[in-house]
Length: 269
Image 1 (cartoon, rainbow, N blue to C red):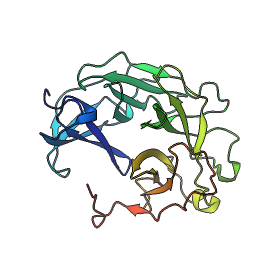
Image 2 (cartoon, helix red, strand yellow; image 1 turned 120 degrees about the vertical axis):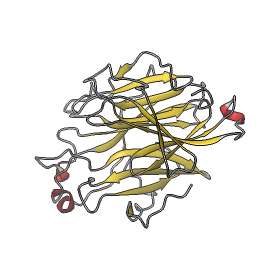
Image 3 (spheres, rainbow, N blue to C red; image 1 turned 60 degrees about the horizontal axis):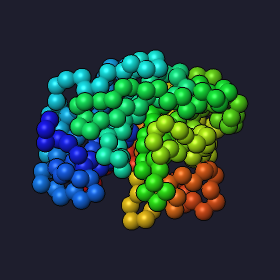
C-alpha cells in the first residue's frame, strides 16, 4: 500500500465511488508517475471499508483486509466516500444506519491508519428526520470550505410525494471548515418528482447518493433515480454556477435525461 498514497481525485458512476490516484508527494502539485484507480465499497448490509485497484477502470483486484470498521451510530458502514482535503488528509464519510440522524466520519493520511471514528449528528436537531443516507463531500475552493451532502426523509416535508412504504428523500447539505463545526442543514436540491411516478416505485433508494463535481467552472450535481430492482434505475444530473445553490433555483437548467447503466452506456474517463 505504500505507493497508493496521496493525490486522489473523485469520480462517480451509478452511485459508486472510484478515486483516480496520481503518485506524488503533494496534492497541489501532483505529477502522475504511477496511475491506478482505487475503488471504495462495502459489502452486505454494511460491514467495513473495502478497497480494490485497477489500471484501466474495468478490471479490478481486491486488496485484502478490513481497512476501517464501523464503530459509531448503528454500527453500519454503507456508502463510503473519500475526499482528499486541503489539509492533506483523506476525509471519509459513510451511512451509519438505516434510521440514524447523522453520519460517520474519519480521516487518514494513507488510507490505512485512520483517526477515531466520529458520529456527526447533522440532523439530530431536525424534528421528524427518519434517516441520513449516502453522504458525500466536496471541497469549495472559492470559500475554503467542505460541503457534505446526504439524503434524508423528514416527516411532514414534501407531502405531495409521501408514500407509506418508501422513503421520501431529498438532498440536504452543510458547510464546514474543519469537520468540527457545521452550518445548519439546508435543502440542496429538490428534483420536483412526479407524484404519480413516485407512487409506482416501492424501493427506498429514490433520489439518493447526490454527488457534486466541478468541471470548467460549472458544478454538476448527480444522483441515482429509482432502485437497482427497477428497470428505470439510472443516474441524472443538473448543472449550476454554485456548488450549494438551494432548491428550487430558477436559473438552473432542467435535469438531464437518464444516464442508464446498460452495456451501451460507457464511462468516459
